[in-house]
Amino acid sequence: MRLDDALPKKGSTKRKRRVGRGIAAGQGASCGFGMRGQKSRSGRPTRPGFEGGQTPLYRRLPKLKHFPLVNQVEYTIINIDDLASLSANTEVTLESLMEAGIVTSNDGPLKVLGDGEVSVPLTVKASAFTASARAKIEAAKGTCELV
Image 1 (cartoon, rainbow, N blue to C red):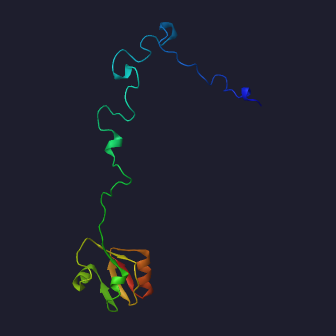
Image 2: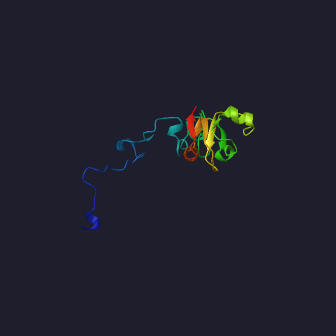
């Protein structure tokens, strides 16, 4: 096989449209663009993304990487390390932590994070646990309850 053998199949290619070469060529005078208007003028009629004056999609979307979460849940977070000072078999809730002064403000439901170590068994009632926090509480013979 040679380079000159590599041809498109017969009938698969169309001839180039020759516009503005008279009425006999099929695309004379206005070259298929109609008589007047923005799209009939020379040069590109509008830039890519132009929406007729409406604010285009690329300007309506946020500029940087991620869209904000619409119904984002804000948690009151606490680490396992902060629970280590509590006595054994204590029931830990957001209210009990606020009474003890470990948490100062209620920023939403309680979420327990797994930074630190706990050695006493606790009954922790929270809205969310990280996997490491759950493992550390259960390793200390405590229980985790989802509220």
